Length: 144
Image (tube, rainbow, N blue to C red; front, side, top):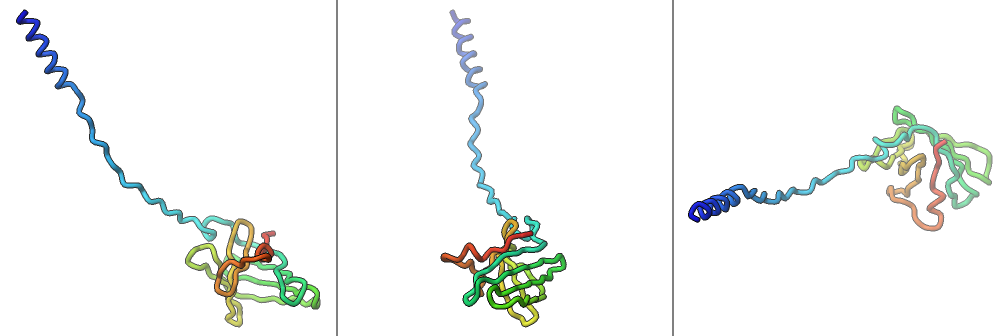
């Protein structure tokens, strides 16, 4: 009987010793992922864009913009319903800090802004903000 009692006690101690220690749950801080993708580094934006922009005193402004690899551009505009003259403007463009907006500076130091989207340029207002309202959809030029 003494052997059985000793055996039982020994088995109980062994069972307690073999119990695996519960590991404390490791709390990891979430990793903050910063999306560094923007139009400048993610889109094929170089090329020719065409469309007709709204006009206050004509039928529309037929517009063509060519973006070159050397960060120069050419804009050709024709005021529909006025005359057939095509105006051409050359200049350089720079990227705003967000990497999604182009700033065009022409030879007269006038600045215009365009938001770069997948196969589209979207004309922005004079402060570089999106144009809203009923005509907003007409401020887009499509890549050719």
